Image (cartoon, rainbow, N blue to C red; front, side):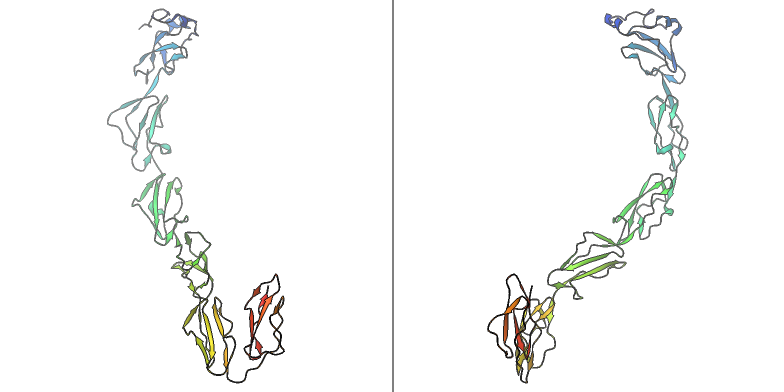
Length: 384
């Protein structure tokens, strides 16, 4: 075998200016050698463009997949940069599927390896690569860590899959029973088979969905609640719950919410009336704002001629009918930061009314008038 030229010289058609470029020193061919290298060594360094044949060692081939190849001196140096490539034969896989025939791979190429169930290449890889030193890793499947379905106990939940054994890094799904959620508030979750076992012991905790509020609301924005969580609510204006309160709270229990957050429009009912007192209109229940008027079938009315239903009940107090003689009242009481209107008298008869005004800068709280009722004045208002 000869070089392209017996003596180092320019190739046919080579530009003369290449002679002026940096020449190439004697090539160091890893895993191979230059053909007739002792003969050509004295001619080095050589000019750009020169070609030389070389031979690869056993187990290595040139990029052309032949034992013989040639290298060229270029501006960047000798090409190819890696003249001899390791050849790896893929013929048998321990604990895995072996190919039907021996398949050669060149250095840098990879082959897919299919391991039997329960086995894997190191670090969970599924390919081996041909390197200068051979296969990396070796095409050998080793038994991998597995996780058992029997190691999982899900109270109030269950695994979604039917498999009993799970390979390393495999995930499986679980679901919670109705009325239960994961720690994140989801109806399902995942766990992973790790080297030390399952990633976490799944749990399903009792939960309550956000309730439906009737004539009420809450400042809590949560969409779900765990066992024993407390939820406060407040009734809308002029509404109250069944306990006659404007605020309430319910608790998430194993059976759901402890109560229904419902509020009802406030109502007033007529108490037991004194004899001879006539009410108009006469109903079983009255809404907030309704007005009652009174008259006596016999005797004198002691108290106001009308009362109104408020969120706290009737106001003022119900009158009575007095058959006996009713007494007069002394002068009306003084009002702090206010004064009575009209001409003052020494004595006021039953049913007489006195009105009040507040001084500038003060507001009247309560009824603006009081009434003489059988010798006593009704409740005095306030100026605040």
